[in-house]
Amino acid sequence: MSGPAGPAPNPGGVRVLRFAPAKLNLTLAVVGRREDGFHDLHSVMVPLALSDAVAVTVAHAGTHGPAVVRGPVAVGGPPAPDTLRVSGLPLAATPDNLVLRAIAATRDAVRATWPGAPADPPPLAARLTKRIPVAAGLGGGSSDAAATVAAALEAWAAALPEEGLRDLAASLGSDVPFFLAGGAALVTGRGEFVERLPDLQGEAPAVLIVTPNLPVSTAAVFAAYARGARPTSAAVLVASERLVSEMRAGLPARALFARAEELAAGNDLLPAALEVAPSLATFRAALGLLLGRPVGQSGSGPTAWVLYPTLAAAHKAARFVHLGVVEGTLPPIGGGEPFVAVSTILTPGLHAMPADAHNGGRTRSKGR
Ligand code: ATP
Image (cartoon, rainbow, N blue to C red):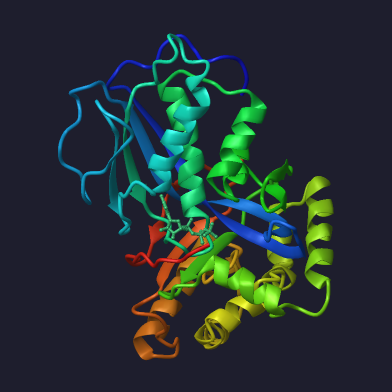
């Protein structure tokens, strides 16, 4: 995106809608710790069809309705603040919600070039439909932030130079640059370096997502990693680099299914996640036994993922998971049933869509 801010925002009432996909880390190698305390990563990330939806409307003064689904929230100065309504999975519409933070940060970024400056771009009324489990390693908050930045810019008919957009994304969260890039990518640094990879060719594998109802703090997982809860070999980095080479050369999507075992083992944060949440080990082992397939972990967890050649096979597996919950072969960890959804890796022919979820989810809180 480049060029100065456009001349005028969309008129009040024009609604801009963006889907905000979840992500899966097909590989996640930790390659070192930086002086700023963050870890450098080497990760192949792909967007999933499972997605939230963010809609924004330019709200002129006096157009705000008072009602919000989970408490009215207003940030920014008078006279008319940005507002947010959340529906779907439970998530507070508080000022620290990444949708509101992304609107405020985007406004700051375009302010300098806004026509008539120092006047600000007008307030936005935002709606978030939450389908991606929260604090689950699926990047939902970062994806909402990226979708909101894009939607706000469109609503204001504004643009940012590439560098400004990059800085804005990185300031909002480690995974936001990936989501703004919009496809399969090699992500390095703490997430700020994103190299788009050719999208997988052909029909993408189906993905079964199982998120136990167990809070796992990303910060705690990285701290456990730093204390030594980590693999002893560099096998994950080797696998991650190989996957990148293969994808650069144009990897057929079905080849991913054939690599399921290697990919499922390709997460350096797994030992640390198991140290932080020991019951996750029993849960993952039971899930592997129940399904007879390799079980991966997305990000710092606790979400487990399993690849299937077809959606039908993944739906059948989802039914097994529910049976496992009912019959007790899948241990109840955390405070309730796991979130179970069938999705696919997003490829050029597919569009983000709301989750085909098999039950409701809950919000779990987790620090970074
Ligand atoms: P990360 O590894 O970056 O923490 P994640 O996928 O594990 O990502 P998210 O769902 O992005 O977790 O949530 C991380 C934190 O961000 C949670 O504690 C949540 O309360 C907060 N948060 C703020 N806004 C949002 C949002 N719109 N959606 C989800 N979480 C949000």
